[in-house]
Length: 92
Image (cartoon, rainbow, N blue to C red; front, side, top):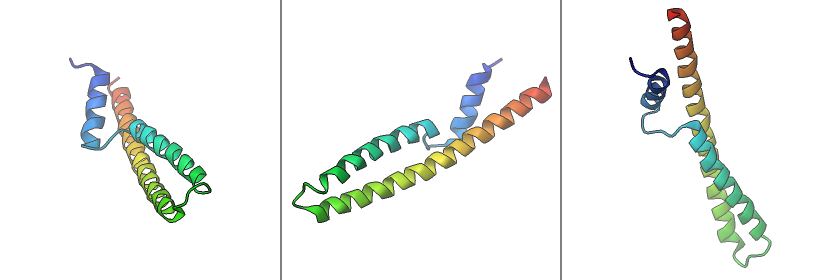
């Protein structure tokens, strides 16, 4: 009999396909948010505010996209875990 946590992880990985787990997406988003904070701080010190504002806008878009992916991945993970638990309880 296959180990139950391994089966659950395999089911989540299959559902997400090539997509990252919510925790991975959250970590990536956090790094970009830190970078964004640094760039915003540089806005007052730069001689090229237009270029920097463009980079800030790009980061904001990337962060928003990661946040959405994180929410979807989290929903998928939670849904599979709930279904898995319900199935285990019914077998019980």
